[in-house]
Image (cartoon, rainbow, N blue to C red):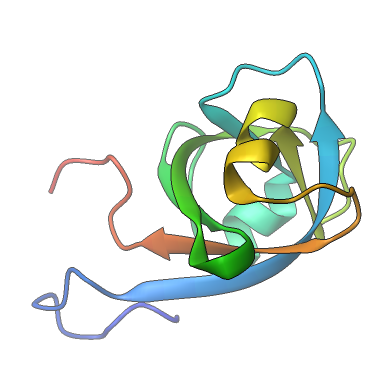
Length: 106
């Protein structure tokens, strides 16, 4: 597991790089990931929050939603979020960072 073995490191970060897929009609607080990417690459559940890192270190926090029409190397991102991140073209790479624990209690 990528998570720290000792439970005393809540700031563990798990980075991943994903190709952008535009989601024009999506809610602006959500990003979409394939269930395999959620489970195996990022170790997150639907409803957890992730940090999306764009150009020039711009970043935003978004809630994860599942979309198995995406490949496990793609992230579906609403237009408004792409604009906030400074990403103008689809098929760019975005960094997705998970802060350990997501929105789960414990």
